[in-house]
Amino acid sequence: MECTINWLPGTGMGFIAETGSGHFITMDGAPDGGGRNLAPRPMETVLAGTGGCTAYDVVLILKRGRHEVRGCTVKLQAERAPQDPKVFTRIHMQFTVTGRGLPAAAVERAIAMSHEKYCSASIMLAKTAEITTGFEIVEG
Image 1: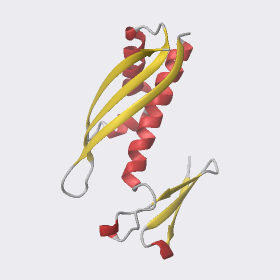
Image 2: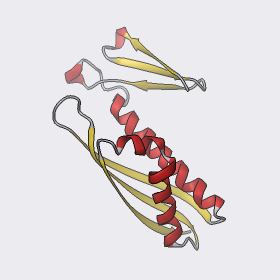
Image 3: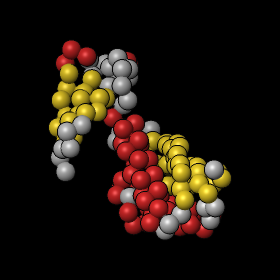
């Protein structure tokens, strides 16, 4: 896996990342740090990537279990250390999983498996952050 980050000098603190798979992600800083607030902060992209990683796992695990999952959202709320390096110290992930006849035990197990075995991002972040999860199931 690889990624190339290029600073865009004319933007203040804007950056563009080109991933190894050929996709682009823009990032920017806050105005008080020289940015123009035109894109997510780099640490926001870390948090978003973590949410995407775990949501992917949960959907895949449920599908492999032959459950009729039709939707999955995860809302992440994070706290960071007040001093540099401002690592994540707490992250709560609230899942909303939509499907037909989804057993709560299956959803709970899928979330646990993601965080204990499969989601590289949340497993890495758990080295500095207390990660908690919750979920609700919506019939549909």
